Length: 401
Image 1 (cartoon, helix red, strand yellow):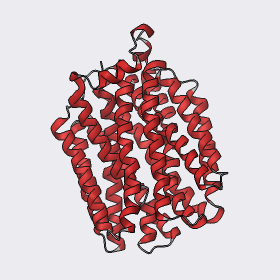
Image 2 (image 1 turned 135 degrees about the vertical axis):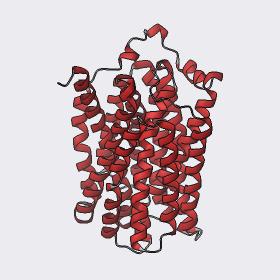
Image 3 (image 1 turned 90 degrees about the vertical axis):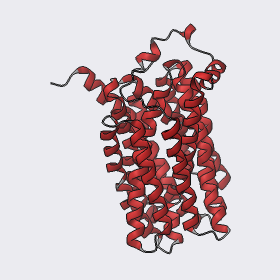
Image 4 (image 1 turned 180 degrees about the vertical axis):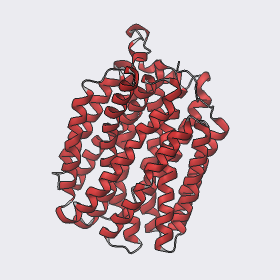
């Protein structure tokens, strides 16, 4: 017989996961839209890079701002605000014909995305049993793969025939349904039990994150987040375009990336199973090393078969690591500053998301080979793995404060 708590956990996972999935649809579709806009708007490689980077600038601002707000007004309210911002911005961007207006809207969309993801993982972490916490948060993150998969399918069948505007309009419709569901979502009991007068001010929260007690933890998380986000957005936002640059047609490139995207699901599910068996640190370190090796193989691939195989491995390991990262981060801080600590780490990481998409076109224009470009991402991921290995603490089965 299924208990009420299990039903509640599944409901929370489903509601939070839907929003996460639609976020992923937008980010995933953006990589395909960038390739389409290059043709429609005759964009330079530098302009293409700015689309991805302005999105990450918005995510950095959103993660910082909404992380602070989550510790003041609650996880649920921030959840709703961020999804509404993302949905309206995404819908409006389908109607713009100006590159500058498109960038402004991508900034607003990025704010919604950047704020929602750390707050969602914080809410779920605080609402589920200790022994299931890591697994459920990784499963929450697995909705990202479904979103990317849907984005790849829509991009493959819609963009070449009906245009990127229709694809954007399709992606925004279901988000309003998730918004409706969230109106009925309870806030975290842990947050609710903290009286308003006991909640730290914004300045106190920021100061506490870098207090002596949490300096090592915060340093580890900031290095980890920067390295992971830098490599992820540098590689994955450019996958369709890299395939086109390697000589494949846009439709063929979308098809190959769709195949690679399917590998994200087993990456998440294996990480979800392992994270409660062997711990967060083990999963993060092993999956990040797997990501680094796969990135190097993708950059050096000389044949189509090796390109697809390395791309599949890259998706498998990288997204498994992402799942563990979102499970691991909220566990580092007490409830009073959990939203702030998670949001600030995520926000700093988004700086990597700004640099990654800009670095690729710059190096391409300098005639730097993809081998060297992906080697840079390989090294970045290894630095992130080292930060967890030497500075991180294991949080499996540790009760949240």
